[in-house]
Length: 249
Ligand SMILES: C[S@@+](CC[C@H](N)C(=O)[O-])C[C@H]1O[C@@H](n2cnc3c(N)ncnc32)[C@H](O)[C@@H]1O
Image 1 (cartoon, rainbow, N blue to C red):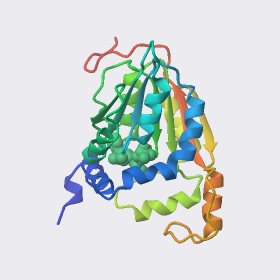
Image 2: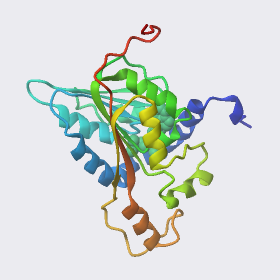
Image 3: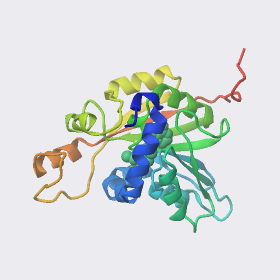
Image 4: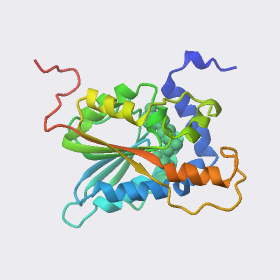
């Protein structure tokens, strides 16, 4: 029997999401997240030449949309997809061989294997509430984002959407649950500017009959989609972060 207490949260997530990936759930998530992601992409106002991080990229479908959005003949732009699950990353790479401005990296949001002051924009779809140390992840985002860079963190699990709280007991891994206001306070505490929260409804049609396990009927699913995902937007101030290991006097 595996002693879950003896392994790190990252390792638990790696094992759990490797299983999801092997069951084909990485690719499946596109249909569940595409509506809220497309609305978010429109708000990101991506431009050719920008450097973008897809944090918790899974099987990489959103990274590919980002790569298309920042490509251009003069300035190609660059997208990095990062995920703690090596099996998700293997599949993301296999599905993206035609992209020359897209790279996938195995690593944790709490220790982003990238240099300081690099990314103009960050997208994270349905991943942030899995991070055992959300504060550490925010510090890392701050470090790797370019001065005035912006992030767009999209989550369906938050206190103000009661339906989503049903997942907390059911999923096999620990989840972080905060309200919209608690997230806003947290982002401000981590020195981000222009902090905003927007609700993004899922605009896909709901079937008349619901037979899955998360909702009692189609009406509940419709209500969940109407309440929508929470999109957290914030900007890094116009300052240059020092490399890791150096402290500003
Ligand atoms: C629900 S999936 C969403 C994947 C993808 N963004 C999508 O929408 O299809 C959550 C993803 O977050 C990743 N994840 C969980 N904890 C992580 C961490 N600490 N650092 C990086 N990725 C993490 C998982 O491996 C998984 O691929």
